[in-house]
Length: 485
Picture: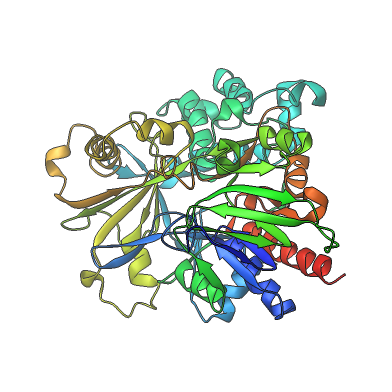
């Protein structure tokens, strides 16, 4: 109730995966502790959110499980009995092609596809090794630490002949553009960050997510959220404005923390702040005492990535319905809209093909990341969809063949950068920083009374749902241990 102050043991700020996991784990470890989750939105989930589109579940935010082996979220989804679908970006699923590269209205095949694969694979392999990146540019590690990742792509775009197969490709493909495309497709959609602000040396200072990317059958991550939220007390529509540590009174042995929100305040022994890094950086939450200089430096060392989606439903499919993923290798539109997921394949395959394909809507989902995503947010929905239709035209019909395209029945455009309680998608490592900034983000303040969780606090797996989940478990264990002393 607004204006009242309630005493509890633990306040968790934010009802995303990190917050829900933290609250649940605190209660499981010590049922005597009074825990409340305070959420600014009118829903749980944070940057996991869905809508119903043409009668079907569509994920607006996080939708993949990145990696299978040793992935706590994969194991949780498995325990909940939800089916997982491997989306193999390399184009093979149990020997079956599930991805195609589209150029000029046609899918590449045969010799040309092998040429493109060889060229792109060489770049991607180098991207995965910091020593290879440094060697390619001929600089020292100290110099590389001060350089943006864009320097790597600028170098290769200017000297594509250094890569195998470039001369053969150049007879029919703009090779410097293809170098840029790899940056847009590999970095733009995974890291969703501007290349000129990402660290060349340390952008990938995390552990590899092994075992491919997986989609979850509908209701997808909603089932995970419901499981994590079960039994927790969650106060929605309560926008936290301040977190203030109060000195212990004479009859108290420990300081208390006052968490004040738009719908009331709580006095607690510990608070776990799980709001996105972007919200912390916005200073919409006032901390007293102020956040430490080290915490501020860590926040500055991380940037805010942005990944949006455009979802289009057509009267009928005009693509191979058995293909899961399409790469847009067309110069006009490929850098802004590098790839699309065939949601018809997903919606048909996820429930073990119980539905007939003709009963599943013809839907394509396009990813837009980094600077392209920010540009997109400056457009109206109609303008954004029109831009995206250029990509559809280029990929499936060829430029100038819009008249052959079936009618768009409905569309959807996400704008995570404008969502007041997200202000972006996830974190990335900026120039001059390394993975240590994630460790610094996880360090508690105020003698452990003010703690932090979320993907931006988990060095091993940042920018992922399972990283957020594990950070919530980490802080729950620390809080219980602290309050049990």
